[in-house]
Amino acid sequence: MNALLEPRPRRRRMTMADVEPVAAIEAAAYAHPWSRGNFVDSLAAGYLAEVLASPRDGLLGYFVAMPVVDELHLLNLTVAPAWQGRGLGRALLDAVEAHGRALGLVALWLEVRQSNLRARGLYGRRGFVEVGRRPGYYPAAAGRREDAIVMRCLLPPDADAATGSDTDALD
Ligand SMILES: CC(C)(COP(=O)(O)OP(=O)(O)OC[C@H]1O[C@@H](n2cnc3c(N)ncnc32)[C@H](O)[C@@H]1OP(=O)(O)O)[C@@H](O)C(=O)NCCC(=O)NCCS
Image 1 (cartoon, protein in one colour):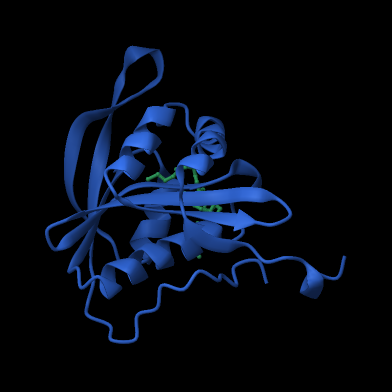
Image 2 (cartoon, protein in one colour):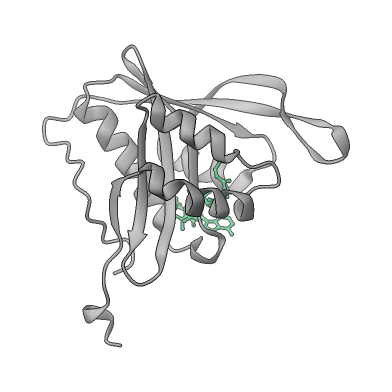
């Protein structure tokens, strides 16, 4: 098919109907995935949660973020393994930041495994700086634990911040 005619992936709010396919991606993407219940609880709590969905290929990725006072905590950012490395993670992170600015929030926080160099590189290049470490925060292989790196990105006000649901990430 001509690439120009292929249906574009679009961002939209995550709903309870998405939880099964989201949890399937989660299980494929992480050694220690969130449970289905973690997503259900996040939606029930009203957290900011979106999926990137392709009319042809189904769900490609998603994020979940929790507003806390004047800050946004990114709890989960995931791209389906088959779709990683094509700019979708960057596009989803851009969307999280745009939501934060549009909501008038001042900072975006996240925790990332010390060993997750790909994600740490992505965050570092997008303006996140390491501000702390939580020793043994994550479960790891063979009953061990792994440190979390705490990262923060300040969100300067942006009057033109857009949170629209189209993405050009696959163009
Ligand atoms: C981390 C993740 C969200 C990134 O999404 P992605 O779509 O694969 O990444 P992108 O294609 O948008 O690339 C983002 C950056 O990573 C780099 N990158 C992509 N694939 C890479 C790889 N295999 N190794 C190292 N860097 C890589 C890209 O060059 C890009 O760099 P840039 O920011 O300088 O342009 C995704 O890989 C993922 O879901 N991984 C598993 C779950 C996870 O670790 N989530 C984050 C938890 S904190």
